[in-house]
Each structure stands twice: as structure tokens, then as C-alpha cells.
Image 1 (cartoon, rainbow, N blue to C red):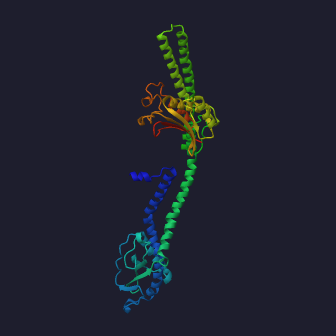
Image 2 (image 1 turned 90 degrees about the vertical axis):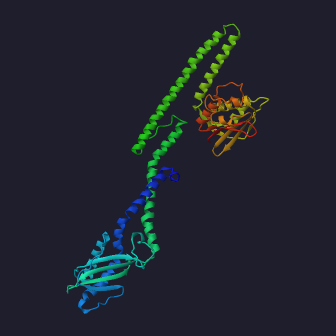
Image 3 (image 1 turned 120 degrees about the vertical axis):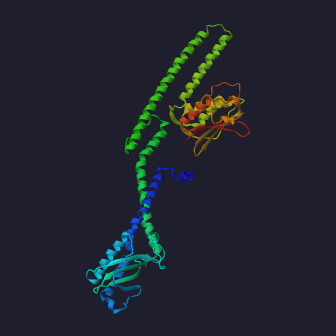
Length: 455
């Protein structure tokens, strides 16, 4: 079953084509029995007409009392007192052959002639019967026909004749190729065209739906989908438009919530600071001041994390200048933060990307040394690599270190602060630009954090 699943096409066009072609071939094979009954009579048409033409003079001149009857090559004549017993044959083609023989004899004799078909058979040159599987075989087919007609003297004249198959003058390979081409190849080609047209017509609205779903992550305010196409596609587009409106409403609610949190939480903190200034300058006052500062910083980082996924001002920005300016602001005599390579300009939100790069540089300066930035252009987009020489991150934490409130200080600095949101904010900003944040430990120690931005 596994190899069948691997062979199953992944695209809708491939699946539809496989189903229709397989169904067409299966139906054609199932209908071969009906086709054979018809073809059996068609194959025997020429031999039957030829046997009737050669038998008509024999019937007209036959005289059972004269003794031995003269017959041409491949023919046998016998006289009998009674009608020979016909060979049992339930094929519908036998009835067609009998009607054809009756019509052909009537034409050749010039009057109606009673005729009883005894046996009809197709054989090869070795005398073996030909069935439907070998109807297009490479061996020459021969038609054997045995029938009886009543004579005026009361006897029955039995004629057994043998003639070549009607089409045996052509090459068997030509016949097989013609059959396979017209019956199978042309039908499969027609099914392919039908599938192609059907998929293009039906998948066009689905492709628009997929493009709209991909674009929804970067632009919630994009125009709604047009309600056209099949009924099912229209219903999906209508549901998508309703989902887009709900997402916009949720984002608006989040913005309102952020404003409320910023006001309702920081206002009491401000009053606490004012009242704290009236207290005596002792150890308790210093501890309260530190607690208020920590609460303010935590609220600020949480709000920054929630805002990080929102693009507000996309514009063409010189990425080289933005990175150089950010590194110059954070550089010190001990850590000059050199910048290597060039990336050119991109359409980004400059403030958000500046926040993203700042978080990465501050983390690197806090936990490591020999920090540098490298700009690189690739086929998939632009990379901003932040390299350092430090303890790196434990391999078990690489997959989860960018999750909110996950701290990797066990592999860096036990005495450091923070709330585990710096890398999470950077990841959300990169994702909001259609990119991603990549982390990898460096050989020789240290960490490389890369921002991938699509072109």
C-alpha cells in the first residue's frame, strides 16, 4: 500500500487524469466482450461471401444420385438423408453469420434458399481455434464454415469450406497498431485534453483562493475574493471573505486591547513612582523601584511582541544603510560590529526591521563577543547574518528557543535578565515580511542568527 501511495499523484490534475484514463481503459476492456461479438461477424464477412459465391454453383448442379461430388480445393461436399446436427454455439455472432450466409446465397442463386448453419469457426494455420484474445494475433486466421441446404430429391447437401480471413492480406502489426492507436491512444489523448480543460476551468477560482490565503498573512486589507466559478468554489470564496472580516475585527480588537493595557497598566505604575519618591531613601524604596521598573519592562516587551507581527509602513529601504546605521549606534571600542557584504534595497517596514536587528545585536553583545554582521544575496532572498563567538545554544533548545518566554540562559549566562521575548519578537517581524529567522551553532563555538527576507 505504501508504494501505491507514493505513485498516487499529488496534484488535482494528475489525480483526475489517472482516474479518467484508468476508468476509460477499464470500460474499454469490459466492453471487449460486446465488441468481439460484433467483430466476430465482421471478420467472417468476406469469407462467408466468398464461400457463398463458390457454393452457389455446387448447390445448383448437385446430384446426390450421381455418386461422388466434385468440389474445389479446401471444400468438402457430402450428401445425407437427414440434417446433420448443428454444433452448439451461443455466440450472437453466429446468428449474424447465418443471416449473412442466407442473404449471400440468395443473391448468388437468384432465389431464396433454405440454409442451416452447422458450424462456424476461426482457426490458425495449425487448426487451433482463435478466440477474442488472439483475434489480432500474428498467425494467419482461417474461416471454417459448414452448412447444409435441402435438395429437390430430399437429400441434404452439406458443404464445408475454408477461406482466409478477410483482412489477412495486411500485416498483423499494422492491424494491431491501428487498433491500439484508434481505440486506446486517441481516447486517452482525448481524455487528457478533457482533463486539462476541466482542471484549468475549475482550478482557476481555487488558485485565486490559494493566492488570497497566502497573501492574507501579509495584508489583511486585501480586496475580497470575487464570487464566481462553480457553486462549491463560490461558497468557499464567501467563507473566505467572511473569515477575512472576522480576522480584521480580531486585529482591531487586539489593537484596542493593546491601547487599553498600555494605558490601564502604566498609569498605576506612574502613580506608584510618584508616591515612591515621597518615601524615605532606604533599601525598601530601592527594591520597590526595581520591581516597578521590571513590571514596566515586561509590559513593554509583551506589547512589542504583540505589535511585532503588524506591518504598518512598507516602503523601499536601502538595507545596507539601515544595517550600517544600526551597527554604528550599538558599536563600542571593544565590539566594533563590522558589516560585510551588500544586499541592496527591499520593500520592508524600516522601523520593525530595525527593532528585529537591534534585538539580535543586543543579545549577541550581551552573551558573546566578536560580533559581526554579513549581508548576503541568494536565490531565495536576502540574508542578514549576525555571527558571534560565544557559548551558543544547546542543540536541544534550538527548535524552541524562539518561542515566547523561552530562555536559553543555561547555555549562555546564568546572571542575565530578560523575559525570553527578544528572539520571539525578531521571529514575528521576519514572518510578517514573508521571511523567517534561522539559528545555527557555528563551528569553533558561537551562534549564527540569520534573517531571511524574500526578494
